[in-house]
Length: 263
Image (cartoon, rainbow, N blue to C red; front, side, top):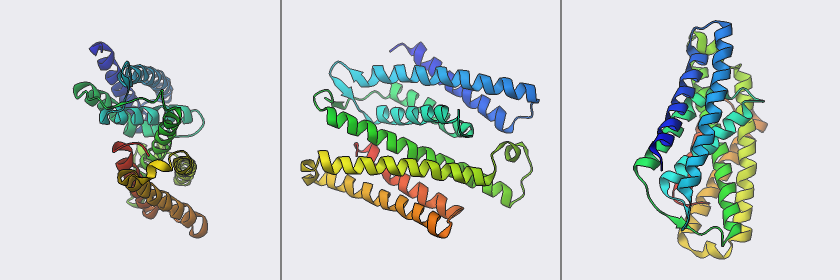
């Protein structure tokens, strides 16, 4: 693997993070802000594309698909980064890059420095490949919701203690941030439901194995957590720290499943 490509991708993610930081907290003119915004998207697109090339070379090898821990980690944060860029065209989610892109750069570095091999022949099992991709998508969307919840928590803290600064003025209103959070949770919950249904339908015979039983049970618990959260929001208008705690709890459970093997 050419180290130049790896280092270039890490540098692009770092530059995009810096651009996002300047947009969020920097004291720049309106014209400079627009140039920084354009530069952010351009740099981010290049970073995500190069990251995809790296993942293709790391995962899709001659022996099969290398789904090692750090490859899965890098794939997950790449997917989150790509979703941010896509949704940022329609929703005010660009600020999440300041939290996600450093993890993208870190994941590339770790996959490069600590190469491992956990080979899976997905070509012979297309159902398993579709299941893995849908599980990764559900996990990534809900991780994005967790990052949104963290940013929302920071914004609430600043407003509670009347923090005056450019960060507050450049973040969307609190109601908009909460609305975006629950849109992400609804989408992730829908995808997680599909993953669980497909698990029971396509891999019912495999559920006799204790490790898969444990992972399925954890996935059901995570599903219940998000179902309770959405029900509490709809019925009782839950908001604030309770929403953040429920979101992070569900995502932590999914992280345990994802990095110990796919759902």
